[in-house]
Image (tube, rainbow, N blue to C red):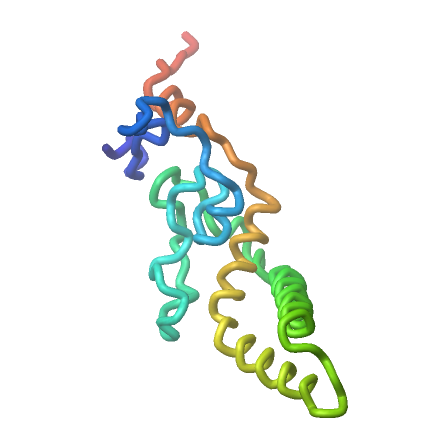
Length: 166
């Protein structure tokens, strides 16, 4: 169903067929990791669903296809994503270092640390498109808060009578 503003709406509180109960708000981590709109946690922020179509992976929708939330709040809004991307890659590198240390071990005698460095660099290069999209999603979620009731409020605004002064 499309609203008066032309954006598609759906039933975000549809009943779960197995339990018969209403689905509550989507999980924050799930919506961020799947690059969903932070306002409704359902609409896709990017035109292309894949992070690895290198020609189109950074093309964003101007508005969320579900709730109509703008994805670029102001010009130059995404300059701050460099800080988020840096933090994500450092956290990923620390996680791979700890995993390597626990599973394989670290030693300078047999160059295992250099094998970790090479493996980590290759993984960072391969995952960079995903990290870039993830950093934009996280950055936008800092400024746009979730509203689980966005659909009913939007419908109220569309159907509310306009009061005119005489």
